Image 1 (tube, one colour):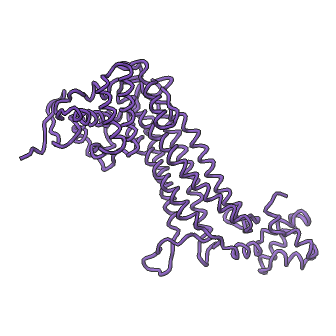
Image 2 (cartoon, one colour):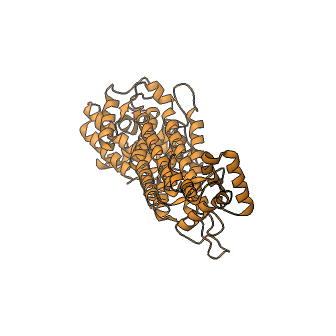
Image 3 (tube, rainbow, N blue to C red):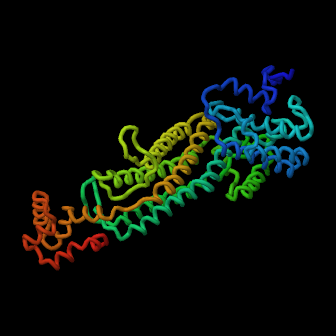
Length: 464
């Protein structure tokens, strides 16, 4: 009968490990010590951790610190980890030792076992590849984990989030162009204001997203500065002087972003300010998304007794009791995502000043929350663009009717008759239900042709 467990030993004694597990004692101790939640490290984090280990092995071989065959086996195993082949071998809870030592050792042990298997060796021997001596050569958890956070965040922002925001911006810009001829009433304080074009409103939304993209791009350089080479406390003890530059060069080629070793490793190990900055940009994007989503819900309110200026795509029944009711489900999803991103930002901000002296000790929670924010904003932006914005229709008749009945048109009379007389006209129109134009004609403020010019709705949507 095949045994279900094997026994490994470390400096603290014997550890029972599942027989088929590729991890070792350090990982198993973390599994036993931290049964906290069901939250695991994001796929993007594990991918970048694998890439760092591959680049480290190749650099160490180049520097003469690893035999070529050993380095090749480590690099191959690490790239398999990066591709997701061994995700089941990364069971650790996010809530663990604050430096991320457990997840770093998880990677070291899994990669070492995969590499050793290529030499025909069993899992118990750590021969010829040792997790610490070979896979972790020139590294410490204290510089690897901050670097992996930066790599994952920068890569996901560049490759996933920014393209998703570009898609959303383009969808909004297309609607701005399509709706540019539609005159509607503007509103401030939720009260009637001057006429605007529906296209101007959507153009403002598109510009909000464009500025979000600009902020994201500005946050990338700080994330591209990596702590690698600082090892345990920033002095670089145990690392070759050229190790960090070599790894950064390989990561730059692989990820098509310019990465470089930190100018000051003491700052890079202790400060998580770049993560706070990036999270702030994510929070700003969330704020823009929720503003747009909430505005669309308001503009589409009804369908008969609300503003009813636009129609959102009908995607699913909205009530278990009211037949025919359809809710703005995509904007509601966007608002919930924004809420989570803002909550994540709070967690990241608090975690960023955790720890003392040479090390931050809430690295895993920063990684989890930062990468979750990027991932859900990416997905939400795609869905928002494709399943909501692209299908929006304008209710031109409602927009036109509202403008014609608006009391705010009295503002256009001010240059001719002054604020006080214009206010009297607005007051009478409100009391009688007449339009501003009708009352102005009755009071002989101007003849019909001049009023047509003064109250030209399209002209009022441009600067005077």
